[in-house]
Length: 396
Image 1: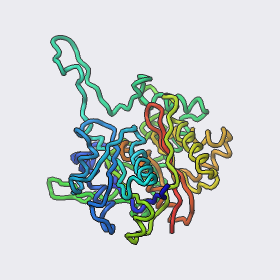
Image 2: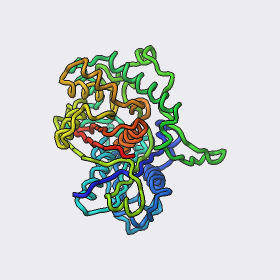
Image 3: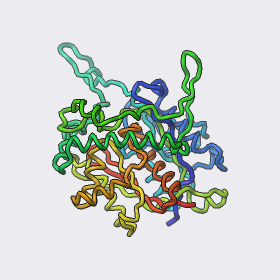
């Protein structure tokens, strides 16, 4: 088995729903991220063996991953793969690349994800063959539903949180933390390593979009307490749930021989990738289950994971998953949480669902390197009971 290394990782800033990126097609955003991750690397575009891009929502046409090859100006012979594993998609894309390289079937892979949620179309499934009489239904895929439970994720994420003893107040507190820790990291320039600039055409000329648009640095518990719960959830509000956003991510991963032959000093070694599935209602706990599983595969301990990223689809996810990892010991859970999402998470930064899996990994790697730490783990849940995890070893 070949070792696999992360040599570069970039993303667009994440735009608000209906914000700065709303008029840029999803595949164009993906192409921008790919261009950004390849820029200034000692690598020709025709030397990329495979492009793997995650995307979840409709509206981009056939084979969006393949479309990003052209959006990025890569040769038409470049192989591409589109991945849809709900919110896990971009991390799964990296997992596909990891498995291709480790098995010797590829040497250089670009992997990431993309989503312009602002451009998600409404669906009219009853009109394909006409509607002679009566009402018809307009479906909105931005209401992230579980088709088997016939319920929005927000509803059962809140219900499961309550079952684990995580109340509305605790979720609101995490929501404030996500925004304020992002603001602190942003002020220190911590996101400069991962961000690329995006040129956005406007009526008054091109505008350079260079900073995440969604976070609220003035977030407070008092403000969040005033928000109403959504979709019938007992606890979930717009303030303790991830932001609907637009953006794209890309990573460049290589085998050790490929990196060495090009004189590239990797950012990190990808030690293991782990994908699981579970009961469709259990999304809030599944990142914790995935972390426990990948630790068992590598023989490493949770204590050795100096930083942890758990995607904040809702505040319920890091809160319930850390309780799971702590075996419901509240004090131990708090100790774990001190290492989780230290620069904010999707509640603050936003969650373009096809892209986030790679975002949390790059945020993890860059912060490990800033701190001089060795191991970290990133985990993310996906709708219908899915989760992914990746363990990295930062290199210097």
